[in-house]
Image (cartoon, rainbow, N blue to C red; front, side, top):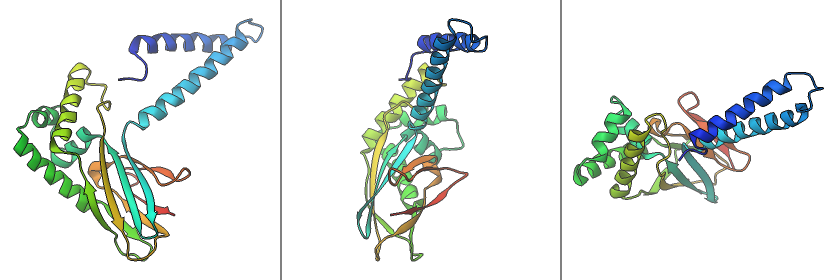
Length: 218
């Protein structure tokens, strides 16, 4: 669901607009300082809304479990991920219509293709220049993936311009190094981009088509 319903957004926008006009006038206006406070609140709400919208996308939390082990915990948008991995040549609507109603067995086969591609294209390189082995992938069941696509299809039919509110899919993996890790070079599959990566409280960033790779220090 949107953070704020459309009628409330319209009302808030109107209040903000009036307040800005009051502020733009003389400070002698008795409403001037109240209006300044309202404008400040509107700006804060706008920033919170933008940040919340950004966090609706893919997310990855990196955790150093042992000196030689990294844990990768994803929260993924299943519709966007599978659309890019399996059928990027068609529209999102066409993809959802086809895959949400696909019989269980062929859907599971298609999902396996996407999982193999994602596992192959994810890259972690240690400080010694050698790739880490990414093992122990944990995937939701095909039924769970398809259920989220069905939810996304229903939301899309109600409002084609309001995507991104279907449940996320949790995916996990474990990366092993032969040597203790001080830093790694991370690159994600194109189907996962963009992804908000959290390596620590102070080390958070986007990986996308413009910035496909980053170095993470521990």
